[in-house]
Amino acid sequence: MIQIFSTDNIPSDFLEALRLSMNYGFVTKKEIWNWAMEAIQTSDTYDPILLELISGSEADARQIDYAIRRRTENAKTDKAFRILVAFISRKLFGAEQSPKEAARDLHKICMELQIDETDWEALYIFDNDLYLASSQIVGDVGQIEADLKRTIEPYKKLQLNNYEDWQIINQEIDERIKPAANNI
Image (cartoon, rainbow, N blue to C red):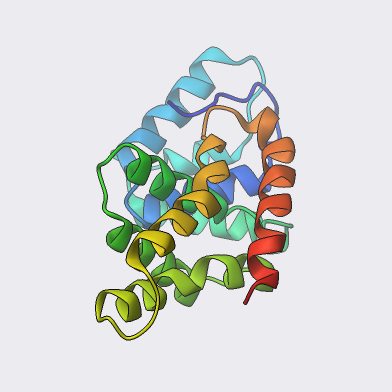
């Protein structure tokens, strides 16, 4: 479920997180379309971007991506990518994804998106470390998997229906990844 905002200005970092979630396959274009329709129908005031998201006769991922990107291009959205790590974290802890798959997905995000150095250092290393350990070159697979889980565990609290908690959750994440980034 995606949070409904009864305001005429949906936060840019939320919109960017929603866009990234769609582009990485965690949220469908139809879910965003339905969210925008519900927000318009249930709110007295709503953000005009919702009208852009539902333009046309059906959900259109390119239109959604374009509308949100245009709206957020100059906004502060540097932590929006963390919603992707949250989806990966929930999949890993829900046994829907292996640590190796989670590490691969984190590596992909780090390579494709511009994220700050502290996040990058904390998340990028696991794919390579797991490869080296599983190849018996260096490292212990069990320890690296435990480190991966410990690092991404606080991200799973980020959800598309709890935006009001994002600032606190992001502070928790910042505190968790600082020591991880310093160990590199």
